[in-house]
Image 1 (cartoon, rainbow, N blue to C red):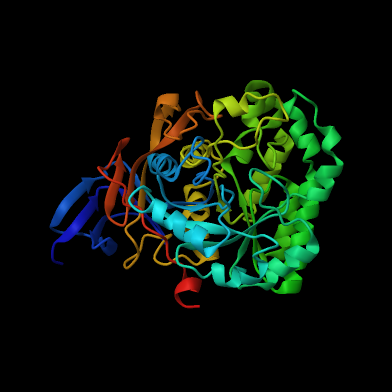
Image 2: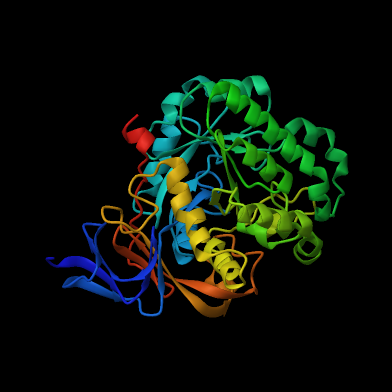
Length: 441
């Protein structure tokens, strides 16, 4: 074939059919050839490296507008691409909330020329906008609707079944849901022990999560509306969700697959505090059981940074949330190295899975005609997470000092080499993601 813009050569390429040794040819931001590629404007030597479909993180909180002292769209997306992430879905609990057409337009305008990765923004469900959510979910650059059934950072909350039914009745796309039961948590507020963040999972207990998940499944079935249950933390929820795959998909996070409360709270204190909580080692092992049964559809980082000063407040004044977009892939590559899951399953959770359940256009696989989004990794690299590597404005990670095997080497987005060997490109070139349901109704 004639010359291509970019050729990736020498790497092991992970196609839908499995890994092969071949060149990848890219022109005009899309994959045009797999196999032996001739002349190229630029050749990227990937010898000894694995080329994965671009990693998609479908749950991040980049805090802009209104909370930029914690993070903003530039710093959060910079952390993403340094961690090998090519696209993110950003959440609506900002200040003001992302709950209107104007708010979505504002975020898209803020992202232009500043976000390093491709992106889409969730619109937050409220009692006030329930009837127009079907219009809002179809706006370009919108990832869909997000429901908070339990209060977390921000003031987006839809807790009652009647209001949830109104939200589910408006629109057609899959709705993402934070499942914790607000009434149960309010009733159990006395379970919080001042100064003791290990009481966090006692307060926001298993039943608060399971009860909310049961409720949303019932309401989704009645409304004939697909839902996506975020950051599942209990094995019982995954067992339940396995029985409702016709109406529900679900997500787990690297934090809940890696940390266990018995060690995390004594070592990290409120830095281990998030919603839903880090639970016990038995919970973590149960999540792995169901992950290996194929139940979770995607991995999301639930990147939710707060400053050290905020986190240093005595529990329960300390806010819930931790950064994670930059460490999502490194943590999971280490789990691959230690035999907990296969690289093929990781690709399904971070690329093919998000494409399949959200209907992304030209994302999620390495195939001719798709966007040239690649996450290039060194599966054998041994390294330690250091604070100097972190790009999030909050400046910390619960995983600082952790020794890992497997590291992101390059992030290529629509044929643009955005990150290579820890160095960023000269300018941010992220663009809005397209969805089938928006493009074609």
